[in-house]
Length: 131
Image (cartoon, rainbow, N blue to C red; front, side, top):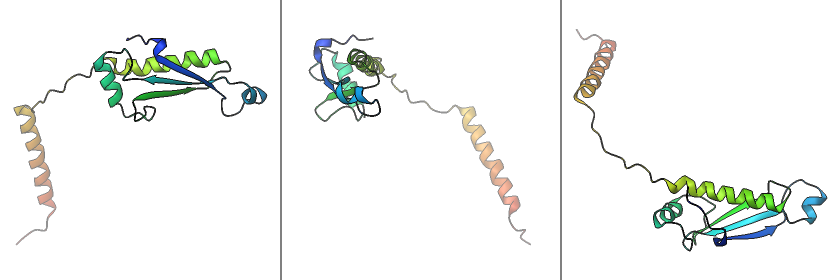
């Protein structure tokens, strides 16, 4: 788990969408979180993996934008947005295992060819009999 410095995160309070009556119309409880990946203090390998993600929340400039509006209070939405940002960073924190090319064993190749010949003989038995 790589900690995220809160000074690198920009928060904007906005009005939430959806149902909620008078509270949602007059209180700016939703939060827009903006995190500039390239300018952050994250390690370079994590930055590269974050920028390589095909996530619609990452802009062309490399800024991750999250919108939190699930809770009634701005503080809870702010905490929710930070937790989601941490989850995104944690998802790329562990480097993927390198793929090693393998070959099928001799026995696996023989079983495959045996299955193919059995299927072939079954199909030839279905053909019309030649006199």
